[in-house]
Length: 374
Ligand SMILES: CC(=O)N[C@@H](Cc1ccc2ccccc2c1)C(=O)O
Ligand SMILES: [Mg+2]
Image (cartoon, rainbow, N blue to C red):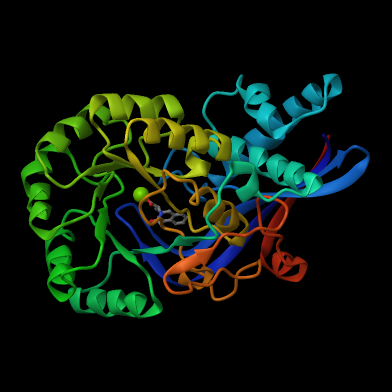
């Protein structure tokens, strides 16, 4: 394909409720969406991409202003140069961009938009492209740090009433054992896991091991992104299975984590690892080692949610992911909403990888747009 034009929109979407983690409280999602115009065999097609980066570098080292700069200054000009020699394919994007170190969320958004355009032009759904045969995926929910344990129990009950099949609690020092104990005592049999977003150190090992008493499915990223060896050490000191999120930024890192015993489970986020094609490679490596994976979330709009739902249909995604219904975070999505039905989300089967945003809602949510001609 030949990319002709890309619009990089920054959207501001209010969250239905503040979302507090160990690293921040967010009341809005300020997210970058790419609208990529391309020609495939002379026919114009539009592909959509969504970037997982936050406005500030508090989840990982990327942030929106940096994504916009690296995409307009480097990534798109490099693809403009590459496509002068030969048509681009989604599968060749990573190769063309490999001179740029890191910036995985920025690269992932570009690759996603190219893949969406390519699949749309071919009339193929992402599920079919991946060979996914399932038609729906189980839906888990990520619950932020609450003001009190009673409020947490009320929030958990609300999501269980909506049908969520797995509860994930954000934890941090001072909000960990008590909330987990309270939820487990109230719900002895629900699948329950925790996510610390790197808030602890090995000094907390004995404290975190208290979670072993509450049948916790996994503990997600208790230590820092770079603490791969430390996670392996902690895994020896806890029965609760170790799961990594922020640390697994690529397939080689996934292989390291598995080889070192730093992860018994991996949270795959296509944005964090550089795109859906790298996400598939991580799925394949993990599955080959008998390591369970599940699909994490970055509060995606329906654009990213659609692609995540298809990815989560792959056989190695054996644990419910954070692919919640659209209304978990947004009163109104910019796309047709994903709704939870009997605890599951339907995997889209329309051509393409992403859901197409409603033009009016997209415009209404846009707080800034950059246009790049290639
Ligand atoms: C669903 C979930 O817990 N996601 C991330 C953390 C996270 C937390 C807060 C966010 C705010 C704005 C955008 C993305 C965000 C991602 C995680 O698994 O670690
Ligand atoms: Mg996480």
